[in-house]
Amino acid sequence: MIKIIAMIMLIGGAVALVMGVLGVFGSIGLMLNPWALSILGFVFFIAGISMLKYRKDTDEVQMQSQN
Image (cartoon, rainbow, N blue to C red):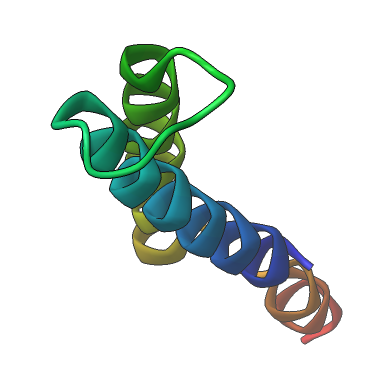
């Protein structure tokens, strides 16, 4: 379950980061502030990567506790 949430955060953060950077440089018109979108995208991208690297999945934790 944690890996699924991490992948969603990773992909969503990457999309928000790309759209925010394109909005900052004027290539794309957004209805949101492009700086806020790029900062949030960066935060979600880093959080998704760190969750994938350092968190054990809940299924793995349950299997280890049963052994």
